[in-house]
Amino acid sequence: MVGLGPGNRESITPEALGAIKEAQVVVGYPTYLDLIEDLMAGKERVATPMRGELERARQAVALAVAGKKVAVVSSGDPGIYGMAGLILEVAGGEIPVQVVPGVTAASAAAAALGAPLMNDFAVISLSDLLTPWEIMIRRLEAAAQGDFVIVLYNPRSHGRPDHIKRAREIFLRHRSSQTPVGIVRCARRGLEEKILTDLENMLHYEIDMLTTVVIGNSQTRVMGGEMVTPRGYRL
Image (cartoon, rainbow, N blue to C red; front, top):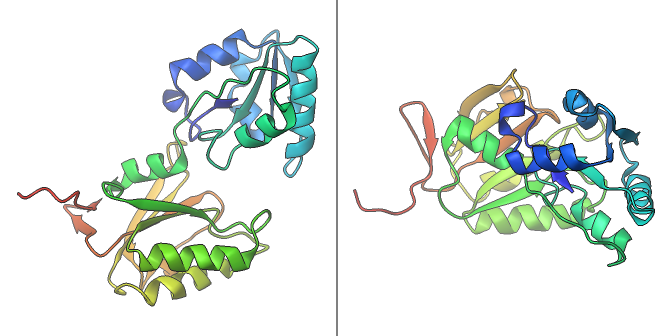
């Protein structure tokens, strides 16, 4: 399992590059394989479409059982909304699996914004493909009530345009409308865009599946154009 990071080559770790180099077969979603096309020479390529994760895992494990050295690539970190857990479940201990970490979207977006994750934070995906919306609401409520900085993955798609609106309503019940919000689109992908706004105005900006949204806690401030959550040091 290899994490490719947010998308740019500079953010792929040397360990991940080494794992891809050593692999005989590289398995992944086509978009992720395209990111490393120049590293694929002489390797077998196995691509499955979106929502083909189970078939991808089964093919990867079957190839490994057959004696091939297989790299399954995920964007970000494979253990954070990635394929690592599914691969381990399908492998069932039959083959050794190594998880190579990568830079996840929360880290990439936070770096673009400044230092918003300096204290406790929660990461929540607004995709309800695998998690029922009722459970997601409970998690949003708990994180908002607990004054966590909150990072939202998969905040809006054509199929669920209103999840981000409902999430904002939940946040507004527990924190000020002036709470800083950072919106980062295409973090570390060469077309990076970032916006600093607040809960009151966050929905005025483009938010889609390429966007990571960071909601500050009661201590988060914008200082010198940077979003900062104090750790608690006495200055």
